[in-house]
Length: 271
Length: 339
Image (cartoon, rainbow over all chains, first blue to last red; front, side):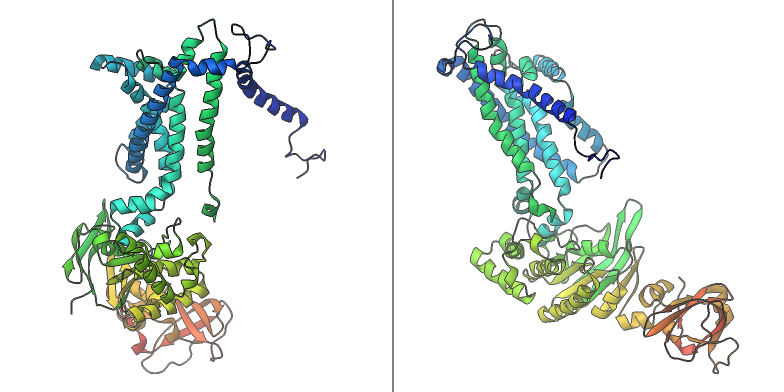
């Protein structure tokens, strides 16, 4: 495995390593800047270095009722959208995983499309549809908008797992006397549980920080991302947005790390 | 006596393909019944209809005299051992075996007792707490068998159960399966493409070809009196002589089968006993098999004929390309119906 120069051709050169780390740094330094300015004493400009460090913005943010309202709305929207996605996405995955019928590919494409479509298209389409139907924008319109892409996430996760499930397991279960419900509960659900959980967590995280579709469907409601968006135009108390951002990063990290762990191939499966 | 299984004029069509075509058969209670045929012959379709995974396009499936054609698999007293074993990977061996009683609502302690009992029967009680991933192919096979037997079905269906095992293990399991079948007295329906397996284990064998049942007979009858050229070739590896060659040997164009071990190989022009049938040809190949050798002779009329001779018999010249005479008695041929 040696090149003519005697160097291991499979190893990266110093320049490549440097470029890789520079790329990573470029992606992560802004996050750390946000963390840093959550503690600054200067509340109007992002002055570097910060003139002083303080924890007072955490107390200020904690006392602001509009932040709590936005957070509550975002959490409820994400929970309801995820629950809908788990139910409908799983049902759709079952319908499409093993059956063969005319138009199956077309339906799959229609199903996955919302995630490929730009959010602005989904947003405008939903907005005009709601207006046409005379539906007032509010909690349920936001949930509907988020569900369009959350369903896809769950569907994709579950269908990938279902396709790896041998059909003979289902047949064996039925053969041994289990009806459809028992087969789902004892054989299929344990096999797709991690896929459901991972899909659900990703869907939750996506819904939680969605802004484009939300802008069109929220009406006067303010989810957390919209709160951020509006806060940027205020000249004072800038560090409060940073405090909220840091909290959100910490909170969303948990489900994303869990989802990552759960979807890793388990060791005994490969035997 | 009411048959354990009866298929009455059963057909299964997939689009225009006749996977199973007007099959009627009856399996007696306690019988070891084999469905034999090459892949795509309809034997597995037949099994799936009996299990209830599939429904016939025409005809009826009867179990123990009861028409079950429209009854789902979980309401039939039939269990299946799958080709890939289909063990549930998230359950231990004991949990897999106890699955049937569990879904029927048997209590935890009672089903543990039942599972151990049946694991004892397949000599796997020691591995009850293992996960299926930790078992060898032969052990998985036994777990699958135990999981089916625990339900005490009237009929056990086995779909190429030994297909994934190596030769030595396969021979061991053949003996064991047969012994277990005699011990529990359950009707076994055994799907295989291996004629040796079917002949050595089954009481009766149904030979399938292209969705039709070609012949249903005891192993001995199938081997000694095949009715069609297909059965003669597939079950007995016999030579099928037809057309011009048949006419030149017997004087009639009707096809007949002649088993390779019934053919003598002589020097060209050698005298043959009165009434014997013979033909001549060129030795194409000679395969040594230890106790026997297999001679491939290209007859002058065109088709090749194989003869199997024990070593040490006085035979003709063994060089490839030399001319030989093949001879056999008139009694050893089996006349076939049209292929």
